[in-house]
Image 1 (cartoon, helix red, strand yellow):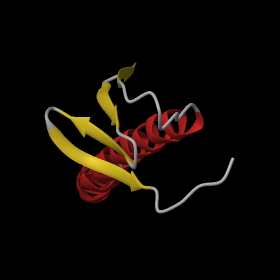
Image 2: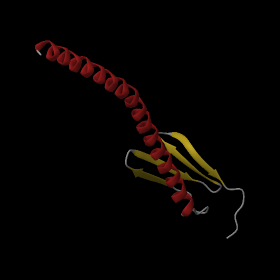
Image 3: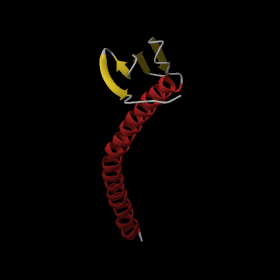
Amino acid sequence: MSLNKKKEQGFVMIESIVSLSILALFIGGVFPFSLELLTIREQAKVEIELSRFLYESALFYDRMDPKNEYFSSGRVTANSVTTNKSIHLYVEDKEVRSIGFLSAEW
């Protein structure tokens, strides 16, 4: 009887090591993938905010009244510069979006 118990105890330890190694491989494969998804999500949020800033600038656009506006939302801060023919959106003094108007009728 005692010999059978020793064999069973050894099997439980080997089984535990194998299952822990499988779990470690699974976590090692899923963790970088989930970090990449979070990075892509943050980039998409920034792109959406910049598009929203440009939309708001275009919504209240008056070609007779050029102006500079500052937008801020979360981590994104942008500067909108409107001229008589275009709207430019800058983030950290770098142009990221622009709209040029060819003609308009009111």
